[in-house]
Image 1 (tube, helix red, strand yellow):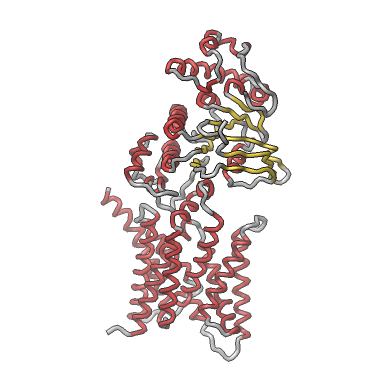
Image 2: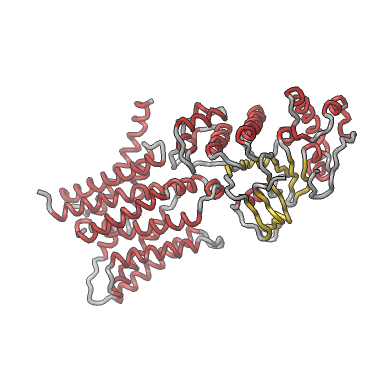
Length: 278
Length: 267
């Protein structure tokens, strides 16, 4: 396996008496999509900030690959009205780019029409797209997204995840994201990290979904509902020829047993605790 | 024929306004108006120290402003006492200390009013040199770090994630501010310097679409305020420093009224 782009080792962090990160280890390898899921207050943003170096851990270390370029889309961006800022200018916030380059990346995210608008006038979805476009100009090896669909309506959410997948394919970058949209994420990610101050379970979506800790964290009903969604996605992807997650078991077989899905053995192993699915 | 002192006043004032424009824009964006005030207050201590130790008061003012900025930068690293409280304590303790220290200065008649409200008509050649060299230095550094400083103003998180040295830039910016304010006191005085920083920047906001337009606009509006203030002072015999600030305020009111009309006209 290639060396990870960024790796957190035994990260421990407390705010006051509250331990927010408890011996967390996580590695992100080139080209993979890792999604952090977990309840509110689980410390997902804190973990991401620690990996990015915005937050210093009490113990443990973060190792970055040399020459790593990170594109970061924060949870929310509130550009104050006191600061005039066109979309074009925002795109060149940390790196210069020509107008043509800006038009190019805006077109890629489907926001070509806003180039001369003020940032403060954009809708939530447009802001997210523009922030994504800005990271494209950096040509990152690693794209980090903190709840990229915040303030985006339901139809826009699926499209945004599709966009993130396209970006991964085009740039070949790794993606680390935090998400609440369980059913959408499960279909679009390679690895899911179920996180609640420590790594509860970690693996391919198929594996994590059946993990007891995942099911207790999100409730059986929610987890099952996602299962059904996931099947629809599997089907879609079977038709278009690629299998999300590459988990290697027989999807067509799965599909025919749709309703009893969770009773079946998929031939995938689940390791208890913080193990990685092999 | 223009009088020499008037020429120096205009040159010094315009130089200062041009330097203050981009700095004022950052003060407005970063909501640091009180920071500017605080630094100016400490300058009086610099005057006293300069006279006591026997160095040029301009050097004394700049040195104390720089020292205050450094103390403040460290004061902001803790979170038990809020930044505004740290600022307020520093500002008024140093002001008081300055007043007390001035009482020890013997045999020198100090025109306190000149420090509080500035004395642009007394600007001499050395002041012009200081403004020119110091201003060029401050603007040069600001231009050099413009993009990363703006990035961290928009989002410290994005800036830090993309390897911009956030803390270092903040400190450099505060030190540059201290330098600019230390240089400006001779012109507009301790009490009015913040106005010269923020009012032209606020006026420029109405017309700007990008940060750069606002920064340059602030410099131009500031220069216009200096010219109008000196003209007012010359013709109506008003105090020059306050006249400059009144002119800046008038430009702001005109901008606020004129901008909506212009926007309608453009679109």
